[in-house]
Amino acid sequence: MVKENHAKYMNKNLVSVGLAAVGVAMGPSAFAQGMSAGATPKMWNISSNLRGFYDDNYAVAHNKTGSFGFEVSPSVSANVALQQTDIGVRYTFGMYYYLQRADNGINPLDYTHEGDIWLDHSFNERFKLNVTDSFTVAQDPLLLQGGTTVRANGNNLANRAQVTINSAWTREFSTATHYGNNLYLFNNDTSSGTGTSSAANPSNRALLNRIEQSFGNDFQWTFTPQTMGFIGYAYSWVLYTGNEPIANYNPPAVGTYYSNARNSHSHYLYVGVTEQFSQNLSGTAKVGAYLTDVYNNPVDNSTSLAPYADINVTYTYIPGSYFQVGFTQDQNATDVANPNGSGQLTDYQNSSVLYATINHQITPKITGSLIGQYQYSQFQNGQYGGTGDQSVNAGANLSYQINRHFSANAGYNFDTLISSITGRGNNRNVVYLGLGANY
Image 1 (cartoon, rainbow, N blue to C red):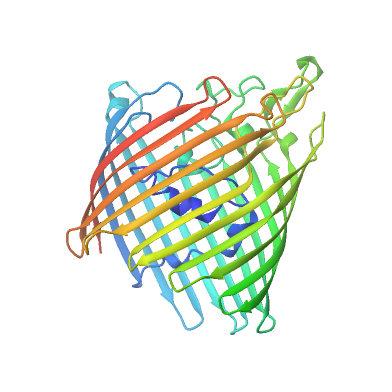
Image 2: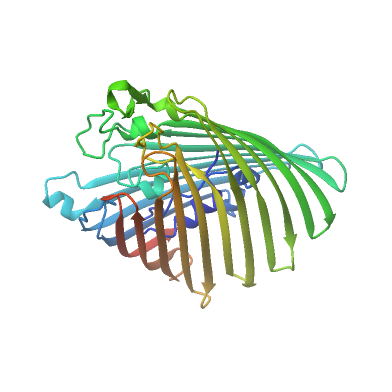
């Protein structure tokens, strides 16, 4: 299972000081998307942001603690376009200083690392290869998008890789064969903050360290130059690697669940269509279902069938200005494992996500953007089965291009989590003002 690419790039605009906004459901649809569109127009590019901010809930916790601070985030990227191959790399380092954390005797600094690597290669006119890899090292759960809902201390890693081979067998028929590999490695941080993991107080490492893999194929028919239909299948498997206790059986005397009790296989089957309605309007709709088997649970092996969807429409109404709206339905990992009275463990969440963004070039030098997302995630089995989390994320940003190399920007972001679990919900407001440099 793979994170949706739209989430990664859309949500980075939602949270200020360079932090992303929300995790979303996983699914095979992201395999067909590349990152080469983010390549710089010249061979290399250096940029940096300096921002001041106020974050009223930097721990993303139920009990708020706020702080003023500042961010420095330099970035370097390079892109080499050869005759048949396009290769690119991008790296961004983030340093965030929280004044009130320093006043309270807490380490005031957070560091983040973000990188992207992509390769597009055309063997000939019929066969093309796309390879992408994206990694994040961070503490903020909204940037990691790995399943935790509160700040995770230390250097936590999320790495997402994709390989896609596009093959045009005839003028009307083609295939897209895709493989994805996601790796999540969390530090041994617990909800109580003690760092001591147990079945009663499992760590992020116990609950969320995992490898997600997926392999599939899309069969595509080009009906007209504007319309392509497809049918696809993907097989995914999730292996939890924490090898630590995550919950006690019910009753506890029977034994203990370990991380790998949530290992699963999933089969995705879907149909869809991609339509270029006009030069400025395009859309893709993909619908189907997935069957998931949590096969390694020693008490109750669980199999469930659920709908799958990935629908999006993009409208570019004037050059530099566009509107996008979309919906996804899929599953994702969760940091909740509590068993119910029958001993069923919480396996994962089924999530519905509705998102929209608008980017508008107000003047040649001023650009504004609005972005929003609503997500409902229902727990599959366990103590809270049938209930779930609701999250709302919204952001506004205004950028002014001072000259070719310098810009100013300001923004506001709002995030809230409403949960059926007492003490899990939180909300967060962030405002920021900064300067950017680009060369």
